[in-house]
Image (cartoon, rainbow, N blue to C red; front, top):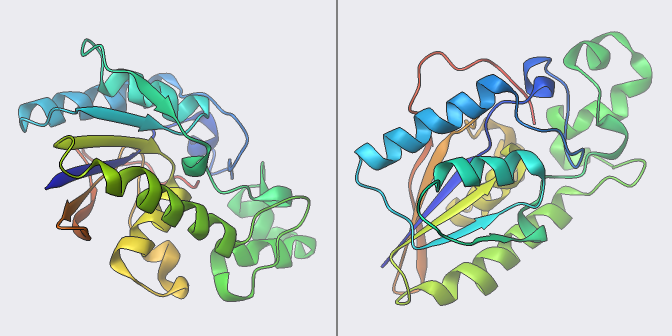
Length: 213
């Protein structure tokens, strides 16, 4: 049996400003690093130790992985398949931009109407993101069963939702209903080749600030 802990990165300034990040490489802010340290303490207090660590190449996820594994000497493996959803034209926009500027109506469908979202300016489709999430689970994580006991996957809000969608087999229209605040912890167990979600959206701190991917 293999325990897979999928954890969203700590807060960034763009999260705080409710600004879409996507593939834009925004670092953790001071509060985000503190959230990661609180989460690291919570995991240790729960007796959770990792044997293997994967991270999105983006700074905010990689720094979170570094904090979560500080002092362990574990190698952090960067994997492009778990980088964040590329939102194209939507990156850098805020909820207010979507609400007040009609020219962003089609772009806003990425959050309001996933089934009919068409990306612009190099953005990804949901199908592309879900495909790389599934590839990561099947080709990278599944072979680890029997080789190690506990894996950390440090990534982002949307790609975490894509991973959980693959595990839980939920429809695309429920994509954004999966609760994923900063430093949310999701536990997936792999046993006899079958993935099973144990819990999602667990946090080790109080009163999370609302933020978007």
